Image (cartoon, rainbow, N blue to C red; front, side, top):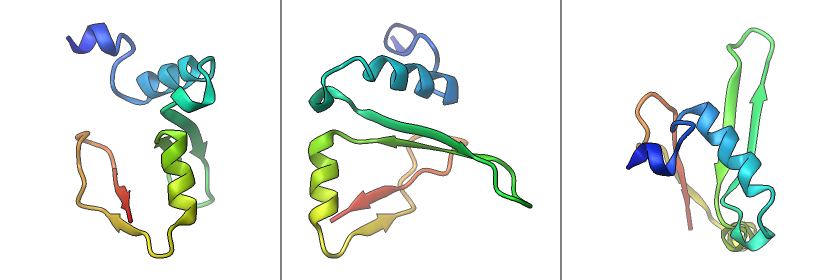
Length: 85
């Protein structure tokens, strides 16, 4: 079933494929919103993948006290976190 829904896998290559696919959707249907790799001096490169519907982005920008749950782990081998309000 995973191969059917995620033919490019669930790693970075899969996230990039979903990002490219979602760019052709109307804005309100996009979920994978941003994928970017950063190369900072004296650090290993790291990639950020932002997944959230546009309505949640609007809500996030309007909240006063967001919290970050760093114990949220759905994908093994990745540093994943969840923003909450």
